[in-house]
Image (tube, rainbow, N blue to C red; front, side, top):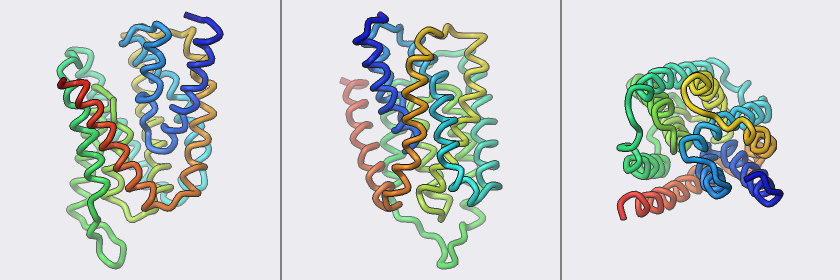
Length: 250
């Protein structure tokens, strides 16, 4: 498995995956097929990617320091809710199977893409209505449960939810998503270490690329207008959902 070619494939793919993670949180989409290609078992590959994502999450947060300072209380709230939900999702995972959820993933991603494309109806003062805030608490906790239980597509789903409950520019709520992802992934990795096999020899290989890409992602976001990011990711998510849906149902 550890030929020079395979190592190059993993490093290059992990840089792409890390950049995606810093931009919208869909790193697994790029890295998972590469892990399978070099001969890693599916479950081990998925869990090992989660470990590697700690490096991408950390570098993305490091690169997003400027945006994170814009609304520290909101970042803390979102991170706490997602992490709290992730704990319950991880516990559920230990006593069940994710097999039945494979066909749900394309639907989740499709829903997220459509949600991001819908126009927001906030007040002219830029304040989010109370009922929206209440719904957002439930939605963020639910995203956390999904993250801990299955995980695929969580980044774009969380981005979609944040896009509906905030009036901040994309770069700011993307930074909040990066912090929430870091907190939730730390919890997941702690649980996985004691429950599921991890390929520790692969972790250093993908960690390098994920760290570099994760730092690059938020920088890229700063130079692209919020609306372009929002609708671009929406279109990307819809295309990905159709592709995954075709694989799952046909």
